[in-house]
Image (cartoon, rainbow, N blue to C red; front, side):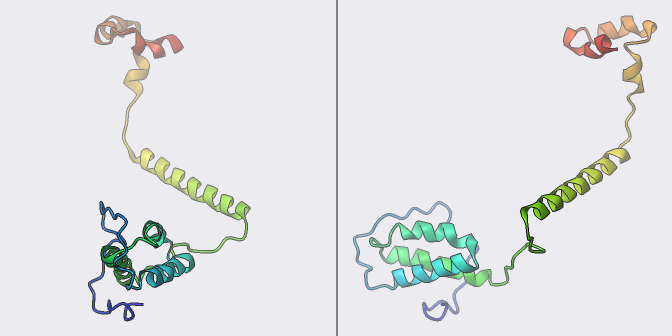
Length: 160
C-alpha cells in the first residue's frame, strides 16, 4: 500500500487524522484520484487488524462521492499513520473461552488491586486515638466545644 500510493519514503504520522481538521464536500475535481480504492483498502485493514483507524475511515467515507485532492492528501495520512505504527500488537495476554472465565479473571484482578491498596494504606502512619477520646473524656469537652462549635461536626459524639 505504501508503494502503490507513493508513500514508501514518507514521514510516519503520529495520528490517523489531524486534530481539529474539518473536511467539506468537494466539487468532484479529484475524481481521477484513487480515493475510493485507498478508502476501501483502509476499511479492509481496519476490519481485519486495525480498529484504531475505524473512526478515520468512517470520517472519510462521508466524502465517497464528493472528494477532492485535499481529501486524498488527508486520507494518505492514515496510511502514513499505519506506517508509523507497524510494530503495534494486540495487548491481550490470552484468549478467553467464556464470559464466566472473563468475570472470574476480572474479579481476581480486582481483588489483587484491593489487596495492593490495603497494603499501601497499612504502610501509612496515622493516629486516630486523640479524635476517638474527645467525645468520651469530660475534661476535654469544654475545650473541644470551642474548637468545633458547628453542630454537623458532632455526629461522632451522638453516635458514641
